[in-house]
Every structure is written in C-alpha cells, then in structure tokens.
Length: 271
Ligand SMILES: C[S@@+](CC[C@H](N)C(=O)[O-])C[C@H]1O[C@@H](n2cnc3c(N)ncnc32)[C@H](O)[C@@H]1O
Image (tube, rainbow, N blue to C red; front, side, top):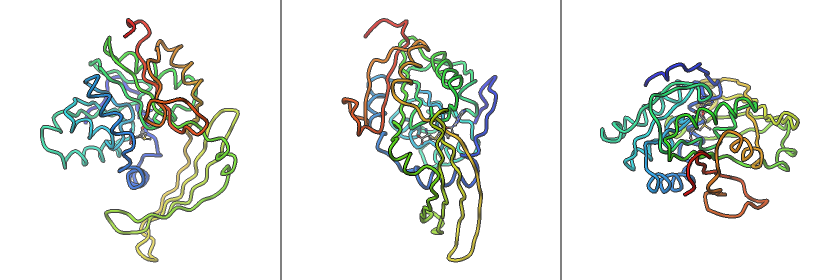
C-alpha cells in the first residue's frame, strides 16, 4: 500500500476498526452494481481509478476481469481489508492492483486514467459544496484525455427520511466468519437546510450473552439531489454523456433510487 503524494490524509472513523468490519458484514457481498461496472470497463478499457475503493468489493472484480485498477481510500483499515481480500486472488490479479492511502479531495497521482469511479455513494462523504467541487476537480485532473468519470449515488427518499428522522433502530446480524451476533443501535438525524445526515451508531458483538466488543461513533454524510450533482459536474468542466438509473439505462422516475452519471471532460470532442 502506498501513500498518495501531497495528500492531506483524512481518516474517516466511520470506516475504522470494528466499523470497517461491520461495513463488510453488511455490504461486502453487495453486487447489484458489479455487472454494470464490468460492462463499462470492458467497453471503455482501463486503467481505472476508484475513489473511496474501501475493502475492494468492486475493485477486486474489476481486477479479476483483467483491468489495471488503482484504489484510493482514506481508511487504512478498509485498505487492509482490501489487501486481505486480494490475498485470496491469484498473483496475476494482485499484479493489476495498486492501493493508495489518501484523501480523494486532495490527492495527486503521477498517472492518468481511462475510467475514474466515484461508485456506491462515495460522493456523500463530501459534506460541503467545496468538498464536492474539490472531489470533481481531482477526478478531472486524473482523467486521460478520452477518459470517463462515473458518479453513482442514491437519490434521497425524503418520505422515508422524514419518517425515520431521530428514530432509534436496532439491527441484528450474525457475523459470517465468527458466528457471533452483531447488534447495531442506529439513529439518523436529518438537517434539510444543510442537506446533512448525522448517524449515531453503537455496535456490539455478543457470544450468546457475553459482550465481546463495543464501539460508538457519530458520522456525517451529505445527501444530494440529481439536479445539483448534474450542475456541480457541469460547473466542474464535465459533460454528462449518459445517465443511468438503477444500473439500467432508463428514465428518472419517482421510484428511482440509484442514479449514475457518466461524464467526459467538456473540452473533449463529442462521441
Ligand atoms: C460507501 S464506502 C464505498 C466503498 C467501495 N467503493 C464499495 O463500493 O464498497 C466509501 C469509502 O469511501 C472512503 N472515503 C470516505 N471519505 C474519503 C476521502 N475523503 N478520501 C478517500 N476515501 C474516502 C471510506 O473510507 C470508504 O471506504
């Protein structure tokens, strides 16, 4: 694992220690978006840069498909989990991956990429407009002349947010490796003026009645509506060449929960 040059490292507690492990328990096998990215990479080619690549849920399948992939993440624990996931892969897959520890808002790599990905809600970690614009500026600076930038996020479900605002929920899941019970006490609060979600989490691991571990954190994420992200992309020098919803090319309707913008630099000739 390398450190991105000139990066101001930014460690997100949401992806630290027990919480990094819990992320993988909940999301590590989520794969609804993977065929979409494999198809895009097959058509457009690499090298690929994934911003906020985490534990390699998407990065590893891209490398397995033969693409050269660089993963950048601010969490050392997520990068370690990614390195462990890669240990189960043959050498030729590992040879295609580079992992960089750094801040996606302030990194500088010596290479330019054919595909730059901000997948799976990574932009929601930009909790201010300045941060969103910094991310887009860094993405653009790392694109090859004919490169694509892909931004993929959930559209806020305002009705559900209003219903769940401040309500404590308890989730229980069996740890897939340890067989222990993970109990997550979770509360989200929404600030509709600043478009911020504050998440309070208390995580416990039990072996029957015996408490093995516990950790608490409070984190913030933004929520963004499609038009404001489209505007931020345009003002950052991107032209949206395709919009996908729900990983299928389709119309944006009220029930749509995912949106994917595929962009070129606006100074590139139209394809
Ligand atoms: C929602 S997870 C997505 C992980 C992975 N892309 C996936 O699809 O499973 C977001 C990731 O972004 C990383 N992250 C958050 N803020 C970051 C920043 N400023 N710079 C780099 N990575 C960041 C987190 O550490 C986390 O691994």
